[in-house]
Image 1 (cartoon, rainbow, N blue to C red):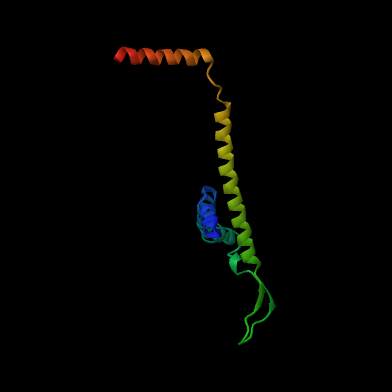
Image 2: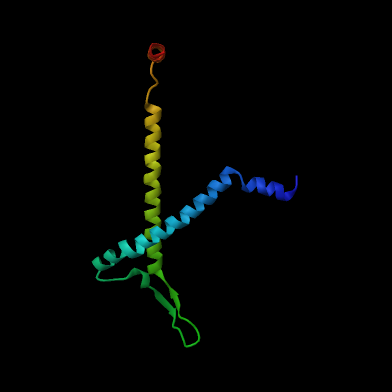
Length: 132
């Protein structure tokens, strides 16, 4: 088998395509979370703390000159990233919890007794035979 044929078979597997879709959706979700953190959550938090804008918080290690930019430790952007991480983690936790709850409910539903299944089949057969 040629290398191109093997690669094509690998790339067209369902799991690889699912992974690609997951990555694209994840990137889009990341942009939504960034906007949520930067545009919705952090402004009120900054207002509660006296009008602070976290994204601009930084420690200057070296002042900039006309030819070189300043060297900064941008801990405000890091705080925004931490908040975004917590939101993503919480969202994933909630979704997985809902999925697990749904699965447990499906597993917990007991199968009807064999007699009930047999009676249901007989009922359905009688319905079918009376319509003919």
